[in-house]
Image (cartoon, rainbow, N blue to C red; front, side, top):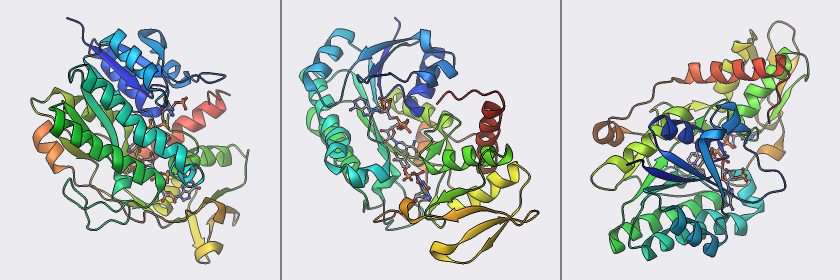
Length: 344
Ligand code: NAP
Ligand code: GDD
C-alpha cells in the first residue's frame, strides 16, 4: 500500500528536499502550510515537485487544526520541520519562538497520543541545543547548554519527543541535525547571504557584504543528504535520537574565503574585531566588513558533530564536502542572477 507522509514546514529548505526524496520513494506526500497572504511554494516549484504533493492548511499554533488534519489524512509518518528557525529572530520574538518551536511540538505529540500512538513521528532537533558546547565533537551524550531562545525552545521539544516515546510508547525520533545548507537555503542565513552576496559582487550589483561574527565555527553539510537521515530514522525497528553532521568544522571567515575563490577573488584580511575587513587582493577593494547588527547577544561559538551512531546504525553518511557545498551555492546564485531568475 502507498505510504502517506505529512510534512510540516514543506515550504522551507528541508521540506522541499524531503518532499522530493519521499515522492521518489513512492510516498503520497501531504505538505502542511500555514496561512499567509502569499504562500511561498517556490522551492517546491524549483525542484519540479509542486504538482506531486498535496498542500494542506495547518498552523502549529492551532491544536484543533492539527487534530482535524492528522485525523483526516491518517499519515504513516509525520515529519515536523515547521519552526521559527532563525536564531537571530528568536532574541526579538522569544515568546512566539517558544510557542511554535516548543509548545507547537507538544500539540503534535498530543494529537498523535490521542490517536493511539500512530503515526511515526520525526522531530527536527538541532545542534543549537549544544550552544556553549561542553565538549568537542558533540554526540548524542554531550550535555546541552543552549545559548538562544531558539535553542532553548528546541531543547524543550527534544525532551518532549523523548518523553512521549518513553511514557506513551510512541515511535518518536529526534534528529539532532547540525547546520545544513543548499541553494534553497533562506537568504537570511549566513551561508546563503554570502553565496548570494558573492554572486552580486561578481556581477557588479553590490560592492561588499556586511557580516557579523566571522569567527563562529559550524559543521556545515548539504541539506539534500540530511533529509535522507530523517527518513532512515523512521524506518528502523526502534525509535531513537541521532546526531547528523559531517565531522568537520569551519569558520564563517573560511566560508567567505572559499566563496570568494569561487568567483576568482583572493581575500586578504585586515584589522581585528568589529573593524575587520576583507580586501580583494587584486583590486584592493573592500568586499567584506563587519557590522555589529549581525552579531548575537549570546553566541554559539563552535559546533562539530560526531555522527558515528548514525553511520553505524542507519548506514548514513554525507556525500558533499565543505568545498563542494560552497561552490555549489555560489554557482547556483550566479546562474540565477545571470538568468534573472529571482525566485525568492
Ligand atoms: P526553514 O527553511 O526556515 O523552513 C521553516 C518552515 O517552517 C517553513 O516552511 C515555514 O513556513 C514553516 N513554519 C514556520 N512557522 C510555522 C507555523 N507557525 N506553522 C506552520 N509552519 C510554520 O527551515 P529549514 O532550514 O528547512 O529547517 C527545517 C527544520 O529543521 C526547522 O525546524 C529547523 O529549526 C530545523 N533545523 C534546521 C537546521 C538547518 O541547518 N537547516 C539544523 C537543525 C535543525 P513559511 O514558508 O510560511 O514561513
Ligand atoms: N545569519 C547570519 N548573518 N549569521 C552570521 C552573520 C550574518 O551576517 N555573520 C556571522 N554570522 C554567524 C552567526 O553569528 C552564527 O554564529 C553563524 O554565522 C551561523 O548563523 P546562521 O547561518 O544564521 O545559522 P545558525 O547556526 O544560527 O542556525 C542555523 O543552524 C542551526 C543548527 O545549528 C539554523 O538553520 C537553525 O534553524 C539550526 O537549528
